[in-house]
Image (spheres, rainbow, N blue to C red):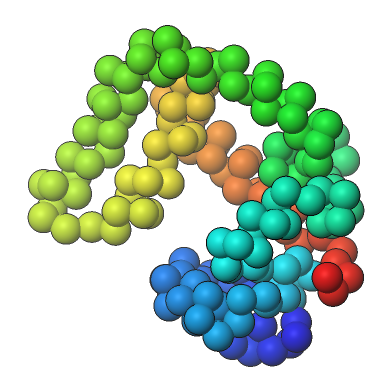
Length: 174
């Protein structure tokens, strides 16, 4: 299964994966609703299956497949309840309806600034030039990272994500 997924291009760490993202997801959804990556994790693409798995952390654990690099705190998506719930509750304090309303003008300004070059060019990659940058810019500002250091913040986050993905041991078949 893992070698088949690599041969078919389902290796989510491949450089060309993003370019083929929607075709790959369509194929997974239509023909392989349960696919194993070369890194040992499982991709599940049917809503009912995802919902059932997300609702049963005792059987389907994120923690059992994650090895965090030394010195790094695990990310929220790699935790199971009750740790996930506690961290999510803490993070949600930064995103109350009042706080989101207060942030709206700045988030709009960030979004408009990212869109301006695309509008000026008359075209562009919306994901690469726009959508990928909004979370890091907004969160970076929330935690006090100066604009000129945002590229460093994104690089560190990408490296951490890559290390985490590559260090996950093979998960047993469900």
